[in-house]
Length: 169
Image 1 (cartoon, rainbow, N blue to C red):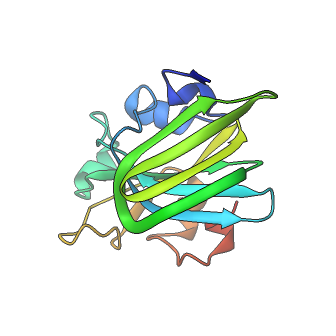
Image 2 (cartoon, rainbow, N blue to C red):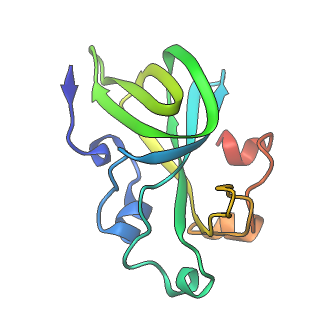
Image 3 (spheres, rainbow, N blue to C red):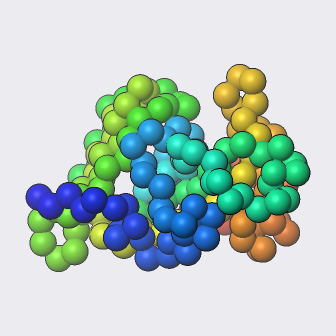
């Protein structure tokens, strides 16, 4: 097993995160909000709050009082899934490491309230990057400002978890 030092090496589209942070943030201390399992693909999509707010956040985000960045990581060709603990929102790390042959990797999300592991393709997609102001109870229910122009036109807050175009594509 070979652990790559940067999550960015697995991302097929890190541009939005690079634009905000200058790099892809470490996933060592993230809040995992949701896990979406989809038999098509099969895929696993993790919706996470990144560990820090970018120092060079868009002025619109600053003016709106946003303090947290959230995004989704979509993993493709998933197999060998094990989810033994899930009590959201959980705080933990998401680790990705090369595994086996044929451009495969192992993903382990572990921490307070989550114990998830699976094998998948080394190609991970980043999607639905947004900023929001975390609520006093820790929820992400308020308004979201999305990086993607399409997301921004379609959503002003998170859609319900059964919204397939948001959580599965």
